[in-house]
Image (cartoon, rainbow, N blue to C red):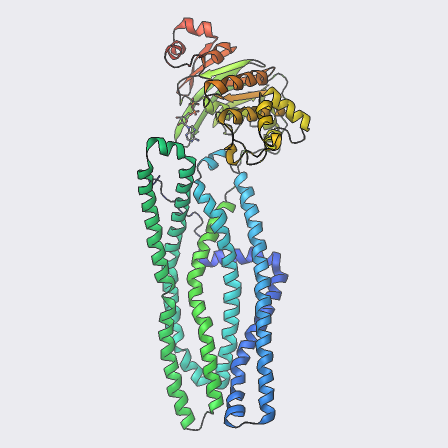
Length: 590
Ligand code: ADP
């Protein structure tokens, strides 16, 4: 919603440092391509300078004092110059674009890998819209920044150097006079560029917010419709859109400001050339061919100069995208991932939590929690919502890390064993199963990638999923849609149970796996879960009375602390919080 502000840019390095990094990183890798590209650009620039140079002959030896042999020579030279210029310009553009595309592809992959390597807390803190902008617009901006830099600056500077060379060759004093407009032009460009940086940054962030809101409209469609919050969202969206519109107007004002200002400055310079050149010709110091060649060079220098003025403005905009990409690439990967250390070996599957303390940022959630989860038994975690039950499951699978205390599986500290071995031994089934946008079979096989078709089917049968899968038009090969959207909640849940079956981990964590289901699908899912629980250490967060009553041990958590433990009868008899929850909150069976 709109109360969420755009997130600030972390990567606040200056333009020069950023440009150096951008080119430095890539130059090493692509130096051959860059060299070829620059040679081609140099040739193309030299041809432009020759256009101005040849004008001297065109005027003096073709128009004023025609000589038949010279006419032919000049005509053929002109053809050669223009053809060479066209071919080299095209070749340089292609060579440089290919490098740009390669860099973009590499960056996208690196960003994706870096995003996956982040901790859960980092991922939770992300705004999806912002990430999408970083991936798409940000990476495109990287390509444009590089392209604009090497092509426009490279080519334009080379071209300008060649043309200014011709101007000095024809008349050094006149060249100095014509260039008096350069300092004020540079001043204008720098001023506009400074303003542009700030505006472009805000614009990128606002567009991220806009995409995030579109995402909410899709993901939250049910809530939006049932609570009739369309108007409120439309209002928020209106504000964001309005902000983006105003920023874009500002960008338009800035990015178009340089060219008319430079036009006017150019007019002054041209007038100066006419005055000085005219006097020189009258005095017989200059011939018409040289003056015309000079003016041609001046006219031609003018376009790249104008582009260069605008370049800076655009480049600043692209650099904002570059910064966004580097923000992601520079985020250190999750330091809690362990590659070294011993592999976890689960013999029995007993879990012991001792004096665990955990907070999400400032918010303390678990205070000095100690409890034991017996091997190969079913332990239920119950308690008021917000009491820290899900957090306990996260700590066991080390999706989050306890700030102090110890969590051990069969005596092995979960923070000392490799993350790989830990996750292999722990399966988690949550409230709402997340499926990937691929086929049913693929989704199940994620439990164990080398499973055969028969094993996938066995798992699906055990999860009560086989029958409904066979009713899909493509059976196991049916695509499930984004997030599994083409299946019902109960069907998704059974597929996620089949996935867990296939994984066959000795420790099973269940976070209210039927909370989101209606009674009919709940029954099928419960049957499947019972099969899945068999022979494993199970920790289940539950609100259903029958699940809780059937558990071997019940731990009652409240406000991050263990308040009661025991079986159903004992806890009912003691008349504490459990008894109260039983009377007021547990869902009985229909
Ligand atoms: P329970 O499962 O008992 O409902 P949780 O473990 O989900 O409790 O949450 C415990 C507390 O931690 C709650 O107050 C909740 O607001 C907070 N919390 C849970 N997840 C996060 C998170 N990702 N970021 C910040 N706070 C969280």
